[in-house]
Amino acid sequence: MAGSNNIKITPPRWLLAELTYACPLQCPYCSNPIDYANYQSELDTEDWKRVLTQARKMGAVQLGFSGGEPLTRKDLVELVKHARDLGYYSNLITSGYGLTEEKIIQLKEAGLDHIQVSIQASTQELNDHIAGTTSFQTKKEVAHLVKKHGYPMVLCVVIHRENIHQMPEILAMAEELGADYLELANTQYYGWAHVNRDLLLPTKEQFEHAEATAQAFKEKVAGKMKIYYVVPDLYEDRPKACMNGWGTTFLTIAPDGVALPCHSARDLPGLDCPNVKDYSIEQIWNDSKAFNFFRGFEWMQEPCKSCDEKEKDFGGCRCQAYLLTGDMTNTDPVCSKSPKHGVIQEAIDSAKASTESTNEKPLIFRNSKNSKILSKTE
Amino acid sequence: MTINPDQLIKFSPMHRLQWEDAQQKDVILYPEGMVELNQSSAEILKLCDGTRKLAQIVSDLEEKFSTSGLTNDIIAFLEVALKNGWIQQH
Ligand code: SF4
Ligand code: SF4
Image 1: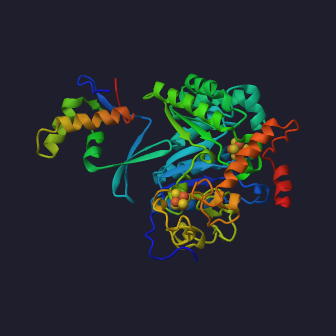
Image 2: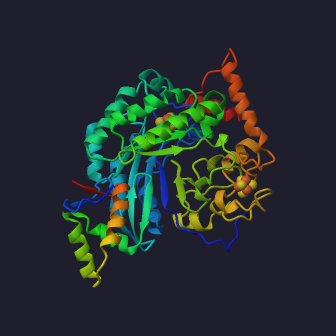
Image 3: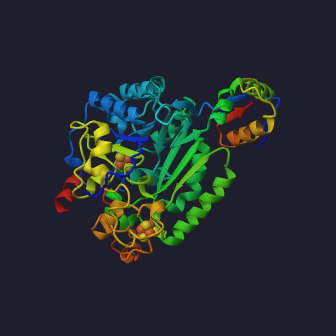
């Protein structure tokens, strides 16, 4: 096994509870696994309560309820209440679809701390196209209701080639909606976004232009709105310090109870990610093969192994290394020291070529039908 | 941003201040984030409950820790807190 026993294990701080893979939207950059339709079973209420209790005991304090669309779970209010009783700071990560004022009030009373609403674009037409569902007006109304009921309002917009030109309008929309936090998340190319990369990856010029616009806005609204700008790592020459280090901080529980060190880890081969139905959170976090696999530096290959930056970025993202080089123990190819760094330029060129091609292939939307087709061909 | 000595100081309703057993520390929680506080910062923030102005906070803390001359340190911290949105004045 790659992990070794002399590594000091820190307790989890952030728990991401992916309550369900069900979602009325079909975003083509969704971070759920491509084959999500194969995982139909969902943990029941008592399982989730036990998970929340055990993770809190170990030290988890930030909690995200996500999915899929967490609002499709009938026991959401009950779980929020349980989380509040345990002292979590909880966040509902939602598309806003199906969030009524009555529900917003119930959730507030149950102790939900904030709501993060995602909007796909600044115009109805583009939003509804990307979401694969008519949802723009609902989302805007939900954003208003979230504010009205005294929650910090976090607006999240995933940025890619189809909406990056709307950056000024997206910022204006966030201001108009009174967002307290705005998350501008450049698409990370895993899951569905990996499949659709040629159609989603903007050019370097587009990135730089959009980033400059966002930076200028950030200064303008300082003190009023906080902006989280998630950088697009394909245009960097060092990878991100993925998950703040494997098995150090983040714990994700998938709808069927599989515990993941990062929400894409399900796609990595041979990790044997454990299920909360079989083990306690403490056993999973401290003793499982999956959570120990990339702890520390023992598992690394060159050039990471002897690199003096390894404590800074931990060799980058394991999922990206796997998706783009075929070996999850390789250096993240985003790093310019990686011998496979060329694959990044190939990805960029391939995306660029698709903008120029006359018969552009269509986006593959995230839905059960496509999930089943893709998981067969993989 | 500066602290107005004539206005009450209140902890922001958009944040939560709580004791974390696992870390043996007070922390501030907010969307997507957490700040760990040292003891003196936590003591200051606990007095920002909307019933005190600057001078009152200073004198309460000086009394509690049987010391004096805390004004400048407290102002410096409160300005950071104001800038980060942890406290409000109005
Ligand atoms: S990214 Fe879109 S499709 Fe995927 S879970 Fe979120 S809202 Fe649903
Ligand atoms: S070689 Fe590895 S450790 Fe060094 S900077 Fe690149 S990714 Fe980070």
